[in-house]
Length: 176
Image (tube, rainbow, N blue to C red; front, side):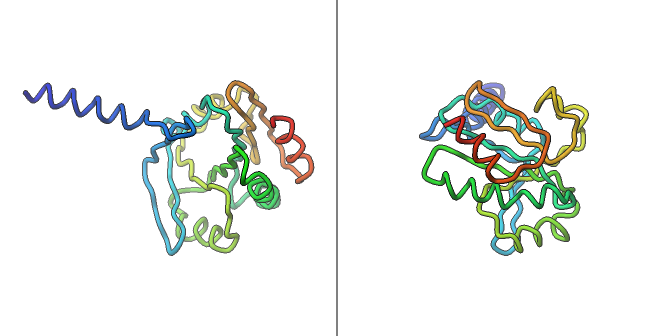
């Protein structure tokens, strides 16, 4: 009896983790969600974040890896915000993946997010084993930030650089 319940529970968890929404988008399950004032932030380790890198649907994903301590990253954030606004009625999703330190959420990341009032989806990738996951994001990534992925289905482009709006918009438009 206990074995049957255990198997049923494992199956239910598996089904939940593979659930999709109406756009055939895998619902990522964060390892933790934290809230402060009016900001909610999902926290992922690499294994819980990894499905985003291989989603197969008609949504264009613009995934930017950044941190508050990275001056070029902060400088380009408004360009990603413009992309979010410009394509808000299209199947384009900008995801800003913060690589800030989890132990500095309250002192650094939350105040930054409060001040900037970002409209793009912001998540925290809290996985200290970067040597393991950087090459899984892209074989071309040295680990420097900012870094950006633009992808839809199997179309995939990786950029280890900062962007100006016109260049970023041009790349997004090529995928449309």
